[in-house]
Length: 317
Ligand SMILES: [Zn+2]
Image (tube, rainbow, N blue to C red; front, top):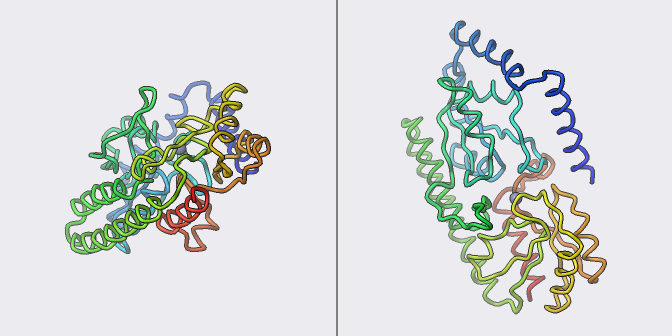
């Protein structure tokens, strides 16, 4: 609840600023002046004054992959603040300035970050190089919309890792061997992760999972599961009462005793359905963003994927 309240407030604050400025173009003006000043003073990209590459990432999975690949040879910062649900993220003026100073923007793509194209276009010649990590992955679509949650299949994560690695190698060829070594290391870990999913999920008796929003399409496709989402692809639409009773009937029919929620969205419908069906609510993390506390506690893509697997095993046995 707290998270979504904070998020709603953040959005409201942004909308208020928009109203005061009347037009988005006016908001851009101070920023453009800043950019011009920076160019004139010769600062430009900070890469020259800092050790290593300056890289911005869009969402947690690509942040984690980039940090793992670049090691000490890049300063990596995630644009979507820790603990914020990323589907509704919008770039602020500060974010645009940061981006203008970067060497590289790594984003997941496949429709996850609607703000990328517009931001790069606005920055024009000051835009950093951008890499779409999901490029080359065959996408699932639902109602003419591509499913952006590619990273939840470890095989897709390998493609993402490779795309990011290639961009790093091109920008900093001196350390290309380091990036290649890190790539091979984490690729091997992803292969192991994929194997442990395959091993565990071929032995379970159930196949259906009821999830908060439709983020597990790639995971389900990879391991022969079926997701029944309470919300759509974008975690923004709540089902009508008819759809809710359908899910309740489905869970009773299939004897499903678990319903999966996530941390960044407070989905009250999930709680209602759980009460109605006597199902236990468990967290199945779509890894769209994690809190600073969890990051400091050493959690990462791999540890969360392992945790997700043990939750799935318990729910499906
Ligand atoms: Zn999502």
